[in-house]
Figure 1 (cartoon, rainbow, N blue to C red):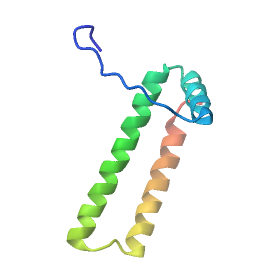
Figure 2 (tube, rainbow, N blue to C red; figure 1 turned 90 degrees about the vertical axis):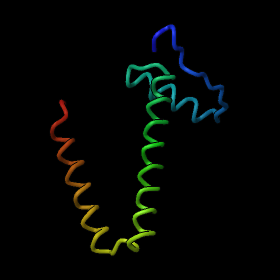
Figure 3 (tube, rainbow, N blue to C red; figure 1 turned 180 degrees about the vertical axis):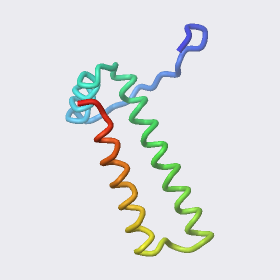
Figure 4 (cartoon, rainbow, N blue to C red; figure 1 turned 45 degrees about the horizontal axis):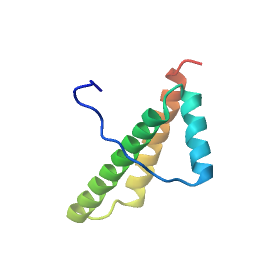
Length: 89
């Protein structure tokens, strides 16, 4: 972030094992704890938005059927296995 527009700061308290996990994960990924936490927060916010979108869709169209959920799980599994194959070893 440019010096003229500093990022907002948060002061948080976490349990010791969470702290250790975050520090280790950031080190493993070669990023700062702030960058790791920012990425984790972005993922959590995307999940929340996705869950909200599903809830809104279901409110308008009804709950997904078991068949629709099974098809979605297969599609996700295929995408995940495809992305694992395309990542460098």
